[in-house]
Figure 1: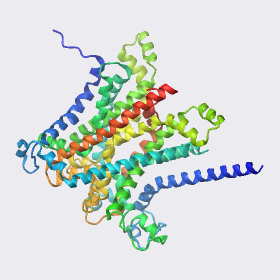
Figure 2: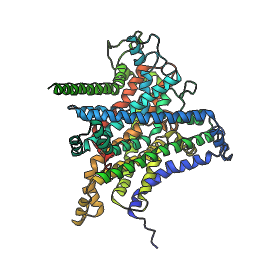
Figure 3: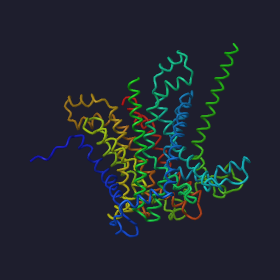
Figure 4: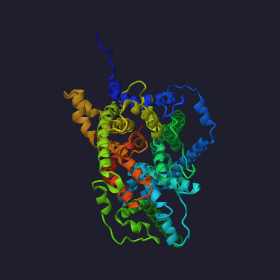
Length: 298
Length: 288
């Protein structure tokens, strides 16, 4: 008797599938199950306590959760849009630079290699109300006399986190869009100029459609990793002061490990997973559409 | 004549504007890192000084020396963390590359049913936020008794790296023309030989850079490591950095020095791969 033959590509993919099932898919099934139980860390036997949708009920009626959820979406929307705009601007500036382009590109890579926890630490240091670079500079310049409580005031802390987030990710956009700009053929731009387009028009109707897929690649890559804002927030404010910078992910961590309510945290975790998947699939489809359009037009 | 002059003046103004914009952006990018490096080398008194001292009076490597001392700075065993980070990152990278090469080759060279769906599925596993994934992993690893071991983190990081590695390597293999391997097979190579002698060397630099990318992901990861590791036995550098902040008084200089140690390998490696990384990510952007 012959064993059933798997086709070569499936065979080649088997190790990847096995690892991902073992470390991602199966654990996610477990967490789906435990989100329907009253599992608490201190009482291991409570994992068998089936409580139906009560965790989800608690989560969805909890105002703390919804505030954190709203703040997370706000942070992501602001950060992704600003990163895209700034990245595009930076790429255009570098493309027009007459010399030193390679040095500039290398400098651009700089924030990409910082681990998010380092980015968080770095800005925690810069925004520190007592020894931070920013307050020191503001005071030396005489703009303010009293130190500004950057990480203590809720709104200012949100701003500081946004700055850290933008610092760490703008270059992903800039680098990929720059790659697009450099790959663009010259003729259409010259043709547009001859036909009397203003710089804005030739950007809007020639450059931008060409560069768009590159921007969406950056968006897709970035959205694969949106949750790394957790690291930044964890070290900068840890969701504080008094939960004023709490994001979905810090809330999940706190509920699970500090409060020990694993079941409830898993229910929240599922909401955060759905959020990530929605962001990724959205940009992935945009990417596919932009690709199809460019393939048809160029 | 008049108009000519005006337009020339205008273009010079635009040029200056662009220059200013670039300088400002580059300052914003470089300043925070540079400030960390400087702070790691100046005495604590200067960091805390009011009014601030802008130009360092003396620079020393004291913070680095005391960090790698016997007990470590402030009781944080930096050397052990560094060793853990290195072992975990290297091992998980090697395994992830092996798995990613076989998977990436399958995507680049074969047509099969459900290919697009499988690819998207693989990518989606990467979107699961670390902290959400850490909950079930914590439960399972605790039950298996492998919490706080190198093995647990290595396994986790392999899974974390495989999807992206497959994406990158798929792109690099597609850049190698199919005809080359076919020609080798006509000349009498087996498919296996054709792969190792022709396609692998050509895609080699790309694969190496995906490896470095995987290494960096493991080296920098925090959300999972902070829950799966408990003690000196397996804590990595990012978790160690948080140790410093949770202490009662923050030792800014020590933390800056630790930050420099974390960033130095990453910095070196990224400069090596920068060219390949961009081409790998953007390949297929236009050609589909």
